[in-house]
Length: 162
Length: 162
Length: 121
Length: 121
Ligand SMILES: Nc1ncnc2c1ncn2[C@@H]1O[C@H](COP(=O)(O)OP(=O)(O)O)[C@@H](O)[C@H]1O
Ligand SMILES: Nc1ncnc2c1ncn2[C@@H]1O[C@H](COP(=O)(O)OP(=O)(O)O)[C@@H](O)[C@H]1O
Image (cartoon, rainbow over all chains, first blue to last red; front, side, top):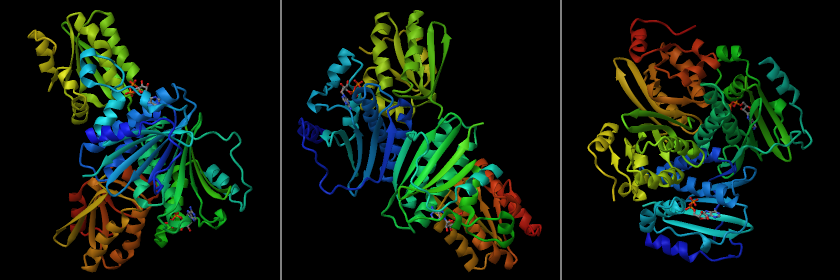
């Protein structure tokens, strides 16, 4: 987790210049989804299948699917403020050492540094109800990064294959 | 079936001018898939879920999923001749009275009239092994049409909700 | 895709909730409503029997968090029973098993109320 | 996603095939290979026990069609047993239930060979 945190923190810069991953790998599969919560379960199921196909051990695909569900939920709720007439994209890349999912929205720019950090100890004692989603994503994945690129917000979730 | 056949036949013109459905409805969900048979089962599962969500009675989603699997299989095998480095699209539209799936490839133009028709009676007696896919699609769906539009081949599968 | 269906049943002063399906941002409102109904009728001893719960996302956990203070403030508790592997795992990732009492079966969760065991501090 | 796994077993002169998973364009080669192995060793009485078959697309039906002449030409037959609802339905859509003999259970399919019943004409 600490490494993941480090990486996440490191990429939390505002206004990153539009950039693509070095060798802009073509996604294995990409989904364009309307911003309706109705579709979240489909994304979750599809993600589970993709993670299974990537060869993760039992249990992991379920968790990765949850992380992606959370990212997609946040796009609908926060990037689009609940508007149901937008679309967002979910892109899968199964590489040699990693399984990567990008959730891409066309909402207004988000300053990743402004995203609240959950301190679960405080969370538990203070019993708040928000902030669990990003926390879950970071607990489950090896790295969770938010970037602004080409007028889109890209939430990239990476899980290493061990 | 006869109506579907009629419609299918009617649209089997070569070189249709690029046209879009009247009110170019935005698909409910669209998938971009690499041309690998590996992904066929995902398409099938996703289609089943979409058909279930569209409200079809038990059994129908399984059959619709099979029809779409067949259309996608044909894109990989016939439009792309087995090449695994292409992509194709699967688009879903759940309307009031119908559920529509489009399977769109960027292969060379296909003359729909050149697609062989299966006469199942002859098929059964002659025991051929090909031609079952399109036949299944037409048996399952209310209409199956092939169109060339904007340099793409669009196979449109429509199932009425009754 | 059976989304979410929540039956409730009363056993003495304990209210049992039976979510069937999944709880995510799409279905959470329904789950919240059922918890709310119990609280509105002054039922504060709740057991969520998760036997039929296939999946829970943070929205569902948030729904429980949003009610737990009122519940415990009124001398009650929200306890969980019969979590499947996936759901138990999510609770554990978040450390929620320290926050909520989780029982293998509904019977044990009911008995814990009868034996007068308190909420985790 | 368990794709396709085909075990085989011999009971007297009958070869039983147990496809587990699904047969579509992605997995059909494996199914064909198993049929081919039986034919190459002069086993022409085949029962495909479909208990573990979740789904079959036209590729799988084509694989059976591609072998049936050789099988029947050698006095054998390919018979099916224990189809689930989905798979049975696909056979019926295509009228394949007129082409192949389908039995509720493996035992009945085996017995049909022993009783010397022929292939459908
Ligand atoms: N995709 C996003 N776009 C904009 N803001 C986001 C996004 N994801 C998360 N956030 C911000 O981070 C906060 C924490 O998100 P999360 O941990 O999922 O909890 P919750 O959604 O319950 O508030 C949100 O309240 C929101 O302010
Ligand atoms: N998407 C397509 N692009 C080009 N040709 C196609 C396409 N789909 C079907 N065909 C043609 O129609 C024929 C029948 O297809 P089908 O019924 O699926 O049987 P099979 O694929 O087993 O031959 C194919 O052999 C091919 O010639």
